Length: 265
Image (cartoon, rainbow, N blue to C red):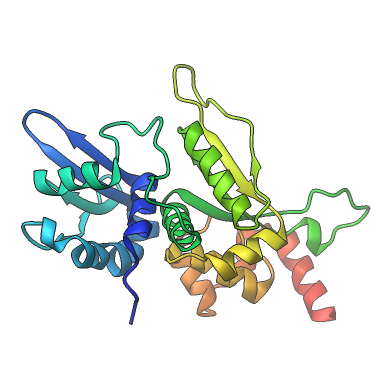
């Protein structure tokens, strides 16, 4: 039985991957994610939550849609009543989220935790890095991706600052990174990272994730002590079910060395 997330968690989803579009002809709400990585999250968590929290504002239950040609899944709502409710109750902006902020109703510690989990479930990432400390000889420490990091990137500088303050209030030690502009005439991306074992462990224990995209990476890290990069959700599920060796994602030389080092321990 999956507990239905709160309204605060929905607000995190929206700030992460939601969009409100209003024109003379149409009112549209969308919340979308990657089809290959996030479909289970949308099917088991987001879609049922919408129908539980917002059914009174909808003409009918939402239907999760898949668009395989563009690799997207999500919820599409064409309902003026629902969109007006979002704007009036939560002060959510229409159009681009250049200056989107944490909604003002997010005040208490519990509300901050729910909002942050929703935000990082949709727009955040957890990944694992190698150690780049110079060593005289090859070792597991500088070959495998075992150092955990949790990150979020957004075009809203205001949002990153607010998330930073919320995390500090909750006892974390995040770092705001230098803004990056990938192409000329594009918005700068503002990012924040938690890159210590202490912070990542605290996040997993006190806030956590509901998105299987993130959970599978964490579970591989816990099981093997590392998590290879650039894997699909299906590959990670196979690894966790012992149907795929995580070392196959590394060069054969590293693969052979790691097997020897493990078996000698």
